[in-house]
Length: 559
Image 1 (tube, rainbow, N blue to C red):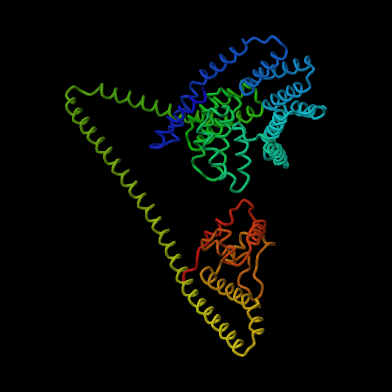
Image 2 (image 1 turned 60 degrees about the vertical axis):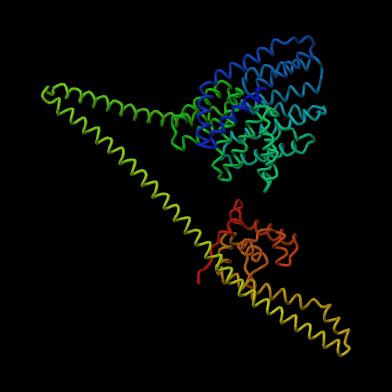
């Protein structure tokens, strides 16, 4: 029910954001949520107190209740989470239940990981691996989740200046997550954010998950609040990586979900605060970082607190600087008004009329300035719009010029090529006809069965295609090789204009990006095209470069 109410609230927030600035509307909602954080915390505390009052007569019932309370406290209060994790361990030992003992050990490892006590967390995980107990599927999933979280937090702790340890810890975390996702039953909505982060590493993986993500966000009650917040945060990371400005909206939604759920072990609000600080919104950034720091202190997250302390110092310094400037301006105004009032006090009664006329003139001048400023702003906007329109027009003209040039070159050459193929076909027909008239059917069959004519035709086609393409893009080979490692340059052999790899990317530059279409035009197999593209990407200087997109932006030579 709480999930449905949160979804309805977010939906109403989103509707006006479509018409206006959605980000600003979401930020206003985040402002209110930060201000009401104590209300959400009190509601969660009351709910937990109600759970504590439930009867638990047997040891098994007490274990189940302690387990439930641990899950409630896991991201809310680290001290209480430790208490109930240890309580689970004591009860499991009394029950002599090895599976419950393993589960309690995972609870302790999770509590230690969340607060940065990595040695203790590692000991718990190693102790579990040494136990001779077969974990059921649910506990095996929990073990892999805790391992992945442990390594992710370690990667965050060591930072980027740790001789490659951050990369190693991230690799181990990804391995644990992939094993988790490979287990049966990984389609649960609470694991969707993990599947999203895995799909982000695969080309085209997110496109395949768009429908599932949309359905999950349309039914927020199907996920735990923490899983929903992580899903929004993962989407924010993916969109930010693609340069999508909507990433900040997803991060704000993640922060809103964390605040409504009273989740104190959160990262989204910190991310929003840093982005707003970079954009110059110091006051909001200060409020958000203060809220995040309070949560880190209360939750005792040692890693996040140390990082936040440095960030808070920088933001607080800038915030104080802004406040000092505002105060100086305020005092300047106060002094100015005081001096003005003092001067007016010594003005004689005889000058009152003149003063009134001056005040009227001042008001008129102020109004004229406001009108003039408005007109200047309108002119500036019109000038910017005109510049943007001119730039778009220039780009459009350039694209049309290139398209017309390519069309003219290829049409003229294609007519010539077609005529040559017709003449060659006529020669074949005459040759076969002569053989048949002379009774040389075997010679005719031998001539027809030979693939030398087709092979020659394809070579002529490649040669003609290469010549036409390089006439339009004479520097294509040099520009393409500039993207590759110096020792992995692709250079045509003597007597050739383009290699098969260059010919494939030449078609991509002409707008033919479909692999089956490329294979059909060049008379290659789909596997051959795929192999050429894969080998070429391995030669890139920058492995993160989108080679197809880079090639499609190569310009042409105007003759």
